[in-house]
Amino acid sequence: MRDGTDRRPNILFLFPDQLRHDWAGQDAAIPVRTPNLDALRARGVTFANAVCPSPLCSPSRACLALGLEYDASPVHGNADNLPADRPTVYGLLRDSGVHVMGCGKFDLNKGDCIAGRDAWGADGKKSLAEWGFSAGINNEGKYDGVNSGRDTPRGPYMRYLEERGARAAHVADFAAREALSAFATPLSDDDYCDNWIGRNGLDLLADAPRDKPWFMQVNFTGPHNPWDITADMRRLYAGIQFPPPTPCPAQQALAHQEVRRNYAAMVENIDTWVGRCIDELERRGELDNTIIVFSSDHGEMLGDRERWGKSTPYQPSVGVPLVVAGPRIARGAVRHGPTTTLDLAATFLAWAGVRPPADMQSVSLVSALAPDGALPRDVVLSGLGDWRVAFDGRWKLIARENTPNELYDLHADPLELDCLPLSAAPGVASRLTESLEPRQSG
Image (cartoon, rainbow, N blue to C red; front, side):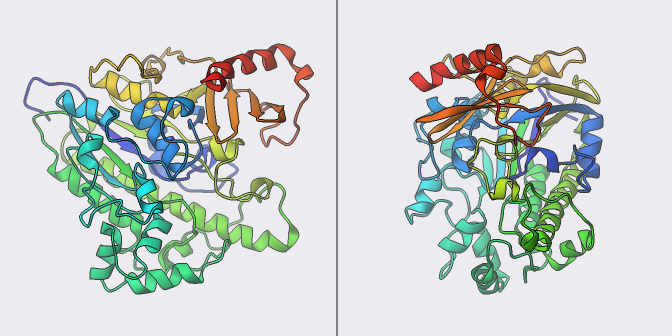
């Protein structure tokens, strides 16, 4: 426990990459095992209809870091860096006296990587201080690490593999993989990237100060593709059948099952690290004064609509899990209204007692975390490139340039297979369209 007078809570933010909303233990039809997330939901609030502000790594993470909607953010694609002169939620926390830590894949300067420049530094410290961190390790994403370290390791994870004598085998493994390859990686469990990130997180926690509040963000690289998992992880779901994607071509049915088993194994592995982080909080005597947040930067189509990855306006891509648990937070509650991970920025600041900047568009979720809590928004937004989404928890409008708008009733059509005419719900369509107008004019 903290001995000083600063009683602000600690914040542990667990932030895997490309985890879709229905694969984090919320959907009973999907047999992925998440005992630690299940326990977190039991002692906290689950936001059942959370979306990301943009379903692409860098834009989504930048929106959260700046507390800005996609159209107001300077990061519109993966080739854009977060400008060094923009105030971040991390810097605001640090300036208020919070010890700000982070590890894993931040993707806030992915433009450097795409341009062939060093994006991380050999020790993973590059840019962390200017983003607002007090301590941490920023490492490569899966493809970025291999592509930048094919001949000489540039980031901290590939340097770690080089020291372990495993880099060349890892590079060769990625070169051999095709889109649906699901064979095991040659890496050991110790050398597997998410396990390395998890250990870095525990090391940071072990060194966290006890005389001031801390914030820590752990950015796992999974369950982002490729579907590389260790031999031990491959055994976790051997023979288990998962719901197939919609549609599922018969000739690809087996390959889809193999990919989904690997995706589930990556999720379960991350869940294991959720438990280990909670164990460390208990060891430090800080669990009762730490708020734990679990979410993801965006989802994964996982073969639905015969699409993979993200970047689409459909729920497997824009929908993300969001669970919050900790002191003074309702237990076992579910909020079914619309929520955006953009609002985590203002929520983090509220917990730290920091007033958000006047131009920040993020809105605190603190009121929604009370036992009788209400959500702060009636409609949430997401966007990328030439499309925008307005979502109210049931109805979803997709607006594209030079294309008729799409309307879906997710209560009746959760797979978004039946695009309705706007005349099917004219009042809803008008309300959702109006919510997009400030973005489209900006």
